[in-house]
Length: 109
Image (cartoon, rainbow, N blue to C red; front, top):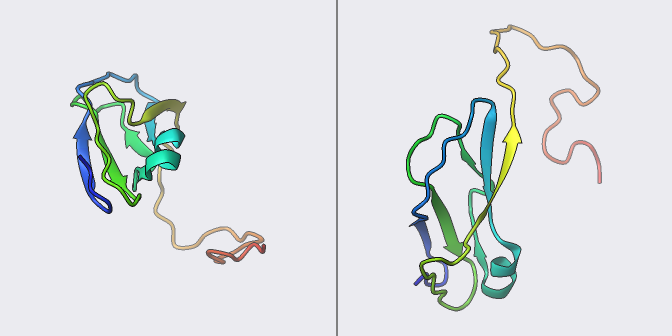
């Protein structure tokens, strides 16, 4: 049972082994979000390719009513994606760009 406003780590009973260069992106299910306000505050969560433990999902009840989660319920979904791990280099300056250091909202409406 997840009370309104409550956040909890929910074990799935599943474990996977991903190959190098592949990550799992754990995302909320739209139906649960619409019907119950159930969401994932860290969405998407990342499963790293070197992780070997049980998959767990951070769920939060953003709705007005308690939500019961039962064994076997589909509480999240995983999308697999390739990624690159570039070599990072220490630098004292960055190349100029059109945007420059402009942050949130700096590219217009």
